[in-house]
Image 1 (tube, rainbow, N blue to C red):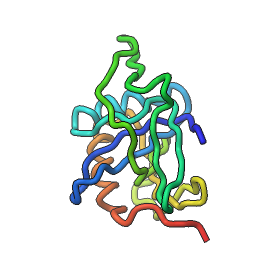
Image 2 (cartoon, rainbow, N blue to C red):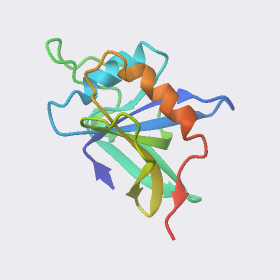
Image 3 (tube, rainbow, N blue to C red):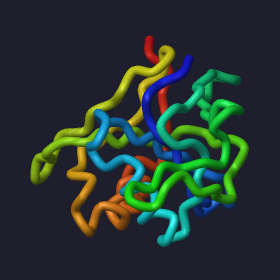
Image 4 (tube, rainbow, N blue to C red):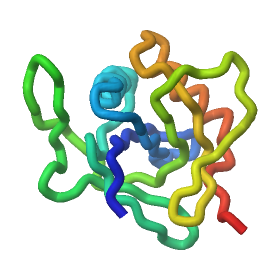
Length: 145
């Protein structure tokens, strides 16, 4: 399944890469947030389009081959970045206006419940919030019953 979303990842405490799927409409700041997150230790997996699949009850994502390693950087162009070939999706971030203290929610993707947060992607604190959200949802995705 291909979705209109970006995917970045960071190493977790166990050393495994943990992916964050970044969703939102065109112009919402997905690539901008991901570019800022790269400066905070995240690695690019996919920009704009992400191919998702299940393996052993876990959700993974990668870039379609035609855009692998590329990221649109408005005002600059489409430079090439060092990327990860794939990452397990541990969290979904959706562009929007967040609640101050939200109740836990999840996105249903291919039959898995994946923790979901809503963020104002352009806030300067958004990249830092990604790491905090991953820590808060350390258990990862759960199969929908």
